[in-house]
Length: 201
Image (cartoon, rainbow, N blue to C red):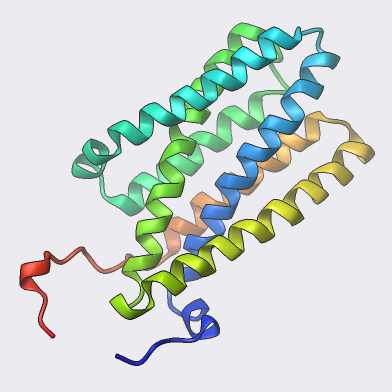
């Protein structure tokens, strides 16, 4: 019944990996929204096409969340999160290499579908790492990590784009997600869900 401090939660095995995976996925969504129009302009892709590509990513994310309850029945949650971040990393890294609308549409659909999986899975991951008394605080800690990532990662992306060009931003994003997949794969598995009727006080 003793509540944990934020620092104690951060020391919980698996918490840092869950938070990093969450901020990597959320920051990647922001970078896609900000920099795909820039890449489109430089590649001669119209505004309407870029808008359609971003819409396709959003719809693919919505579809994956609708199917998430079925996915977690077939695949272990931690394995699914590793697959999701890795399968998001690859198409995003390929965006500046093949900047043509048909290829970009495929990249957006694949990346969008798997990005939609990341946020719900990391939410359930952090709450399964702490006691029932600390779940709200754990979710707040995860949200703080997300906000930190939304400040730091775009700043790094902007500096990189100014120094080397917009294509490098997508490489950075792919590397960010790839690292999240590697960290998640090495993280200790969270405790399994316990039905309410089986819990004891």
